[in-house]
Amino acid sequence: MKVLHISGATSWGGNEQQLLDIIPALEKGNVNNLVFGVQNSLIHKKCEESAIPFVYTKEKKLNKFSNYKLLKSIIEKENPDIIHLHTSDSVTVYVLSDLLYKLKKPAVFSKKGMGRSMSWLSKYKYNYKNIDAIFCVSQAVMRSMKEKVTKAKNYYKLIVLYEGININRIQRAENTQELNLVKNKAKYIVGNIANHVPAKDLNTLILAINYIIKEMNFHDFHLFQIGDYTKHTDSIKLLIEKLGIQDYVTLAGFVKDATTILPSFDVYAMSSEREGLPLTIYEAFYKKTPVVSTKAGGIPEVIKDGYNGFLVDVKNYKLLGKRIVEVLESKEIQNNFKERSYKLLLENYDVNKTAVKMLDAYNDVIL
Image 1: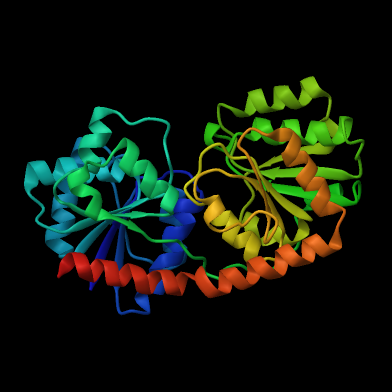
Image 2: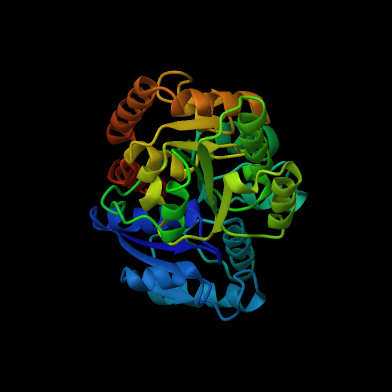
């Protein structure tokens, strides 16, 4: 089987890492993979490093008219058995190219996140007749699709396909120099890995840190936050300065292979407002780092509150802060969360198991 993967991603996040993880796992099932994406993007460079065949766009964005015809020519040359769409703009390019040039190839789409709303154009393309299946990363994503996007006649196309991680990829690494400086100043490290986008709601995490310091009178800790800076970064910095907690927070920006330093965190804290089911939770499970998170999206599907992690309502910064401290102060809670989550990961969320299910889904579509 040959699969053409299409991604318009230009930055790096969990979705892009998942694509890079799933391809070698699919290869074990005798699947040949080819990626069509943006030239000189991070995913282009990562594919080259991993010897994954990559065809790049004619322009700096995927959704350009020249790429509609290019996609047709790629399909004629490579003759894939199925097209796997990984980003919203890849769906747009596929739909328009198919309307213009009649691609005549089955297609599937991986839906990872949940938006606040959908335009009529989005609803049209996600219900497009020639998209044969939509892989939802969690039950929460599937519910959201049914409520906001998918027509009842297309419900049968929605499939819950949990992601998995490549445990061979994640190896222990030396701490960054910046993290070493932090560890010398504080007993505990609270970690977070999230790009500075509204869905991650980092303001709630900052408010939780402020609550821990000023209301709980707990001081011997430091928040080490990793993630790409965006247009929202200045407002996050402004909140930190307004609260006067600069000495307790490091915004490290982008850190290469950030998940390799998860073991250095005493607790991994998430404050997301919207999520599909973030890959970093699985990575924290594997690294045996206890997790405290909001109940965003599909997260409650893998964390049972009080059993293998703590969950709090979205925006509830006070309880988020209390739960963070509760984990930091109890070795018993830490050990229980670590071991239970690690066991859960190995049993259910290894990328090789995901690949087997994905290959079955491909075959269902093709046959």
